[in-house]
Length: 335
Image (cartoon, rainbow, N blue to C red):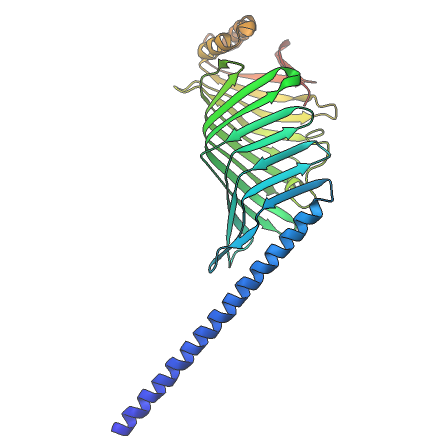
């Protein structure tokens, strides 16, 4: 009996030892594999960044490192920069932190610090900062499948001295989402408590949201990238563009639009407006030079709604001119 008990004990011990050895071996192989992958990722990224410096589209990552062991892997940069020479656009950002689960490397989560500065030749400068900016992206070998960005406490200022333009912008919260939908690209964005400062004239906060599909634009987020003449020649199905003053005072637009090769917009839109008088007064107070037009348009819309505060009317856009019925009521400059 004693001999049998000792044999059973030694058998269990051998199994435990084998299990422990297997765990150590797997752990060692996993650790070696992670650090090999991290080294490979860092080398390939540095090679790509160095190669971009010789091309027309370049990017930089200050003090690049790869972190996240044991269960994540991601790139970290002390600063980030991009330079698109053909368009004359360049930008600098603060630190970048990214992470992807080891078992799902195509899905990354990113945090980006401000402040940031975006410059466009000849003299457009946009300085912006935020409290928190997070993004997520799902990518495959042919490019992005979908991506999202969310931020809090956005504050910025756009200056274009040659146009005597200075616009301040602030938003409590904002989001943007893009995804491939067959050959099309779905885009949705929102801004909560958006406030604009137009050269000392501060517009009261409002909420803005847009939801649209851009035809034949899935390739814009693929390796192929967007065309050089974007957005010329683009067809858009605008599912909704809304402006919310609060207290139920909402104005929204929906319908198909086409941006011609000359940059002018054409299309047909359904305008739904709640609180016609409130919108008329807000526009008149903010833009006194447009008060007469606002009064005339509001009167026309009220007439179509039998004097009510809610109306649904058709707008036609022809080569940038917006018509309510037969009467022009606005101009959209060429894009």
